[in-house]
Amino acid sequence: MTFAECKPALSPEVLSGIAALGFNQMTPVQAATIPLFLRNKDVCVEAVTGSGKTLAFVIPVLEMLMRRETPLKRNQVGAIIITPTRELALQIHRVVSHFAPHVGGGEARALLLVGGTSVADAVAAFRRDGAAILVATPGRLEDLLSNYALFDTRELEALILDEADTLLDMGFAAALGAILGALPKQRRTGLFSATQTRAVKDLARAGMRNPATVSVAVRATPAAAAAQVPAAAAATQATPSSLRNYHLTVAPQRKLGALVRFLRRRPDAKVIVFTMTCAGVDYLGGLLGGLLGGARGGGGAAAAPVVLALHGKMVQKRRSGVFDAFVAAPAGVLMCTDVAARGIDVPDVDWIVQYEPPQDPNFFIHRVGRAARAGRRGQSVSFLLPQEDSYIEFLALRRSPQEAARRGEDALVLARARELVRADRDLLEKGTRAFVAFVRAYKEHQCQFIFRFAALDLGAMATGFALLRLPKMAELKALPAAALTTFEGGAADTRAIAFRDRRREEARQRKLAAQDAENQQRDLERDDVGLQRQREREQRRRDKEAAEAIRLRKRTKKKKHEVLREEWDELANEERLFKRLRQKKITQEEYEREIRGGAGADENSDGSGGGSASDGATESVSKPKAKPMGVKGG
Image (cartoon, rainbow, N blue to C red; front, side):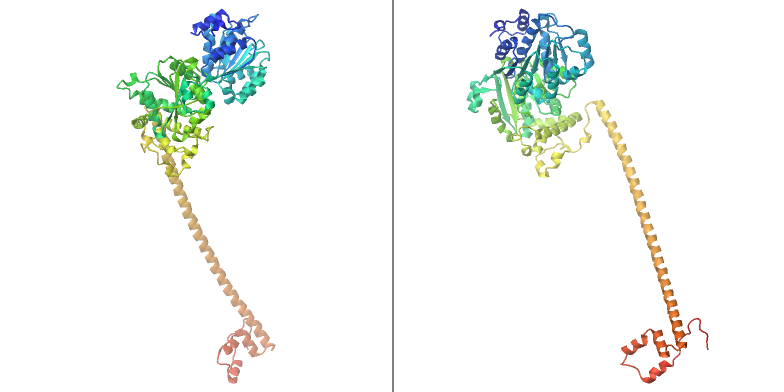
């Protein structure tokens, strides 16, 4: 069906804008959706990527605004289009703005509201010029609706949620709830997505009234039907029929070489390469620039393909510049994360390379959907490790049939990559960050029954990243040394590797000098502390010896005192006995026995059996050896 044959009929102004885009025939999703929307139906649309969903909601929105009996005032908003990413919002804004000269008036006047831009500038632009259509990301729109009395939405005609499943997957459910609560109920609502998840259906029930469901399926191509895929998957597929999907199984240490060879063989192609992490994009983007530029048959840098990097941590101005540069380039390589996997339309993309699998398997469809858009032909290839080959069957069950790709490796690529890393510390640091980010992202993969972290050879993976030494990370410390023998490093002293950028290297040298000075000072302080501790230990030893000497002196003095006391006690006892003897209370014999303390008895018992009577008499008349104290002589 042509756009001119659409019922209800489209206005001449809109048809003129469509013709200027070069379109005449409606895609299936457009033919099914536009008439329903124009008949004031809420629509919930599921269609494969690249099927023309953007025009399927932009055209009805423009028609609704043009058919109003009273034009919108400057502060009134007639339609709101919400998208998950800034790049997609920018693309939709450009499509809407394309119709402005054809439609005339303010019906196609659109305002872009995304993060990374100035809120004050957006507020000033709306107050100055107004906007009938807002194209926004959820966070920025919620902020403006909640904190600024800016938009009059009482005349809102339509609300569009593009890539609705991604809006929910990215955690915007709360923001969408706040936005829906702030908008009038009397409106048309459209949900557009490549997949219909349970969350999307729940959102449709909450924000729509009796929606018409549109699901556009794609019949499998003969090639896909001939492939070894399950019958249920061969009947329909979730990817465009003009897209051919391939897979390549390659060892981790050969993966980089396989990618370089793949790109070298396609110097005139426009290729998007997906990785899991922002750090991986930065590293591979810098590495590929050197690897491809140095192997183009003597052409040098002039013959090297354009290699660009795009990820969500870039500032908005740079992201927009990179995206525009890749769109304008006739050929080249765009390294990116899944920030570019949803909705954005890059003309004439020849190949999609999934260098690393997406953490969310749903993103496989959205990644490959950047090629074969609007009926154009395209191809994709997924790089898989040997233990990940069950992913092929998994994709087939999800209606994404795969074919095996021809193998190709370049063993010299890793050596060249290490040379590039040794020549620039920037690549060295980016490589370390990329490897760490990859390992931690792989651990959190949603398909852990396929992408098993325990089966990952981290030593070989580090080799494939062209690392010169293994980073310090918990995942590596937990492994036995034997598990890392597959790592093939290239340098021991990475501290000597300099930045190619002179200013960065000078800053690093200053930092190193400051660190060395700090370390020297710390060593001196440590030496001082050690000397002080030694002195303290020596003082404690001397104090202990002095205390022991004092204790011994006290003990000796105490012993002498006890001896003297015993002598005085002995003299006192003798004096007492002598007094009793003079008073004749005891006999001389008893006196002598008491003086001796029983010694005489002991001697007799220890002798020959006793002494004679004369011995006893002699002993009895013996005089005491000394007079006790205090007794006068007679």
